[in-house]
Image (cartoon, rainbow, N blue to C red; front, side, top):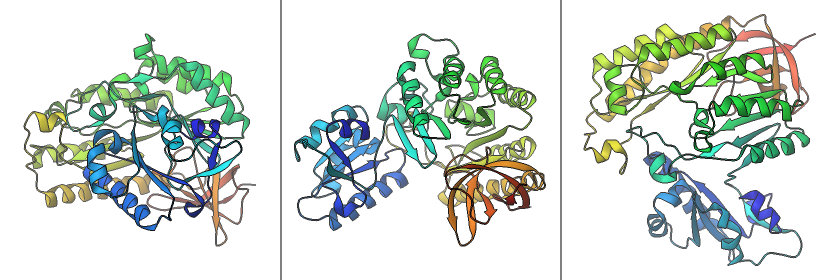
Length: 415
């Protein structure tokens, strides 16, 4: 949307108070996310000045536009994920495209193609998903997977590289499914080869949101062969008990998943694997949960996120009449127990890094400490590396690790 609006002559405002149009990127995936979106919309609706327009964009706007209009008095427009290309026409209804630059955007923005944050940038490979996971509303909201043409992705990458971006984070609802609708076999591996060749000056390329059944030998070999592609993989598994996975409509062959992880670790001994789990899915028993606990202890993942199940209207679980039968306090207790195990695993892994030299991308500075990330840390969701003294902002610097915390590391500039 940013690109389309800039092409129409509008530009991003530095502050909400300077904006003519406020666009909020909403999320409609689960109830807490919807409530957070509503809170932001209400806050802006109450604080905006006369003449400012408020637009809700994104997933919630796609899923329940009428609900948003009813919930947020004075909302001027909604634009869902399937209509984002119409954003210029929508804004032009309120403010005709200027002949010169015009302040128009405030605060929270939705960028469907690329989104830059400092020296890192996200590139969307596809939108939508052709999986039918029982707990997930994404296909309902966004439809089936639609891959972007590779030439468009490469053009975005070249543009970002020219701007000095040091990290490209590749995202989609399922990046490992990239190119399936384009008739490509091993489409993600092929795209990575093209990307490495297109932007050799970008040192870090990071993969997010891959599906366990689609981690092919070619993808593993491609990742292992190119130093630019970080030895990091986001591999959401959701659970480890076959019966729960079948109810979730997820790959239930846990042994096959273990073999994929073993192949990844054999090919890239330094690989950091992030995963997520969902606790409290309908019918989850304590015994099934214990299987998940044991799996996490055995596999010793580098990064783990744990979420409690939210029963969402329109998802296969709701349509099939599954009862949300795990009490909320039990869900939360299971989340805490699983995270307690992961916390000790994370600390042990961090302690093994003390004394090592690691490249760290510096992203901030406060009170005599620089804050950055290593290859093991995806932006905003993983740990940090705290570095002594002020380091060059937006640069990758060598750091000697001196201290291990539960999720973060502390170090000093390496000589």
